[in-house]
Amino acid sequence: MSRIPAAERRTALARAALAVIARDGVAAATTRAIVAEAGMPLASFHYAFTSRDELLSDVIELVVAGEGSATFASLLLDAPDLRSAVRATFAAYLDLVRADPAREQAMFELTQHALRTPPLAGLPRRQYESYRNLIGKLLIAGASAHDTAWSLPVDELAGFVLALTDGITLSWLADRDDDAAERLLELATDAVMAHTLNGAHA
Image (cartoon, rainbow, N blue to C red):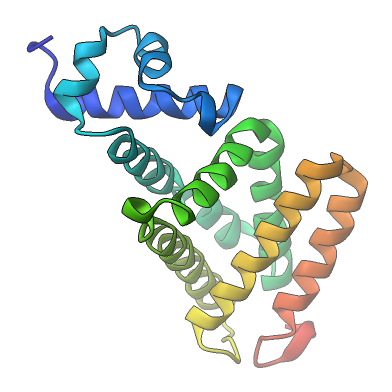
């Protein structure tokens, strides 16, 4: 057990916890279920974490850290215009949701659990701040690449985009209607483009 560095052990257990939650829900993510998923003895959990809530904190941090911007950034730069860039980025996000819906559902469950658990109460705020920061960077990169600017402060517009993506995600998880989701992406794109300095025609 001591041969595995503590940081690697924590990451492995966090990944195992996410797998359990995605498959069976937060309530099923007991310490025994998590270590079984990770293929570790129970002592490994107590060596790495002081509590299950501490582990769940690591799970949220792990997912947030994994929301990299490289793929989205390339879409912004390769698109012929800003509207196409925004639409392609929304589409790429929805593709990620559709590729692993259980993971997306797990994140919503974890957020709700954290909001109801005093030791984790600060996590959702940090989680959504990280999301807004990522979206803000993409908005800045997109506007710069296509020689325009946003009419709202970037942080405010990022919050709006985040609200749109959360809504689209929950809607798709509820009905799995791809056609309806695509129509929502069109509306979301128009809503974002309305906040360029040149309006929806930018």
